[in-house]
Image 1 (cartoon, rainbow, N blue to C red):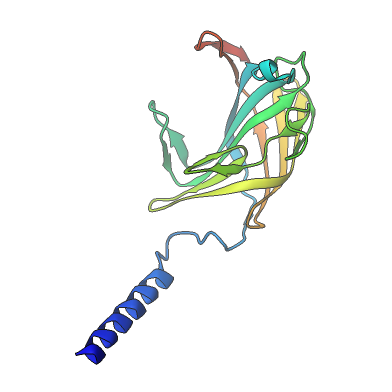
Image 2: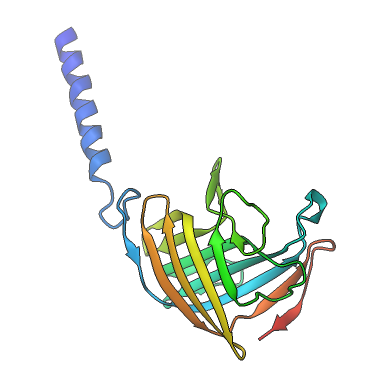
Length: 200
């Protein structure tokens, strides 16, 4: 009886192990490094002003989002389609800037709040914050935390040229770009109201 029970347990563990290893073939594996070099087709920025001035940070705080062709966002904020979504929050500019100035912004985990830095991607419990790249597919959603690299931004009239050279926590590379308009919106965090579009 004991031998039969042990064999049953061992067989069950073996089958479960094989199922866990096989996984979903359509889902990107988190430990497999890749290079993302698809250009982004849509982007916008949000300006929060001196959001952290109550803790002594006078830099202007911006958020940016980028989408590759094939992704759309519905009225509720949900992403549909297939492609890549790059989310950058806590991007810091100089204290007098209301739009993103031409500069190179560096992922920096040490000098938080300094001008021309970007907060790296972090996981806090079940949530992720900071810079992160999400791969969206028909049957999967895979988020990669960005831990190093830089964003190079140049203006030519009202057209922005952005070059991204970054890497993620699993050593994947982001070697992408964006050229086009950069609508910038202001959010007044003191009254929790959105203003009209500021530029472009």
